Length: 104
Image 1 (cartoon, one colour):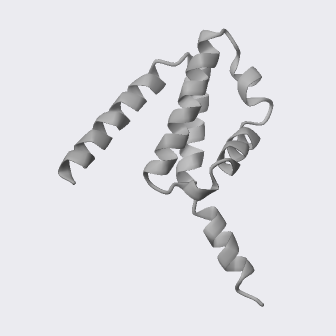
Image 2 (tube, one colour):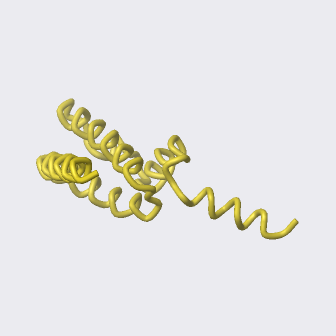
């Protein structure tokens, strides 16, 4: 268990280093998305989702695309659509279902 914690910490540090190496517009967007998505976090699964976004941003930046060409005009919509692809990684669906089931 201790080794797993150390490995996760290393991975997180490497991730943060990669985020900080992004061009400024991508770095700002990535940090905003992180803050938003951690609100729906479910442990390491959300870290994997964020890593996928980071990889997309790194690739897009190297292709010379602007951040708007990647996320569109609404970064919240981009983040929500990304989250919709990974519903098992969020707790919001659990809360929505609990609310729905509160009256029968």
